Image (cartoon, rainbow, N blue to C red; front, side, top):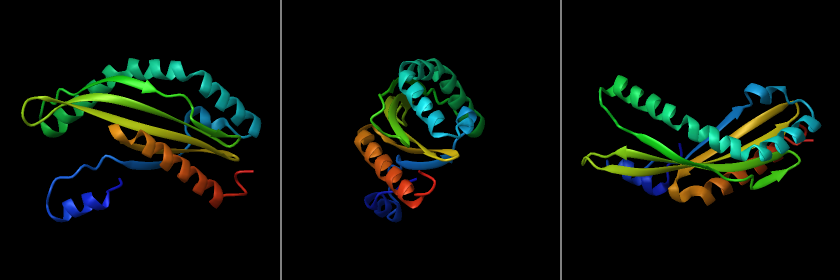
Length: 172
């Protein structure tokens, strides 16, 4: 999690603060583990660009399951009927790419009950970058709130550049 200077001050003062930004680094999983060559990575990137609509449709199809999973976990852990709804997933086209990486963003809207009995709209934004470092594909994920799309993209771009610069042999 990332905590802004202002939020850190609120935390120290015992006040509420929003902690809605995060960076996650992971190694590839699933079919990405099979990518070992430049040609395979190039094909994977082309296929990812061609499947943007399918990804959006899969996300939207999984929204109800996600809703159920989140609500069941809240009920199990806190004995509260949360009534969280998930919807309006958007997958944006690839916006940053090179021979060694690509990045795209997506957003998801949730309706979450607040303490006053009303529902509060919460939007989560994520930018994912996939980097090829022979023979591994790395995934960098930057997430934030509704106003953070440009921020997630900028941080992902800078993080990708830093990881690439720190691993010049792996990125050839």
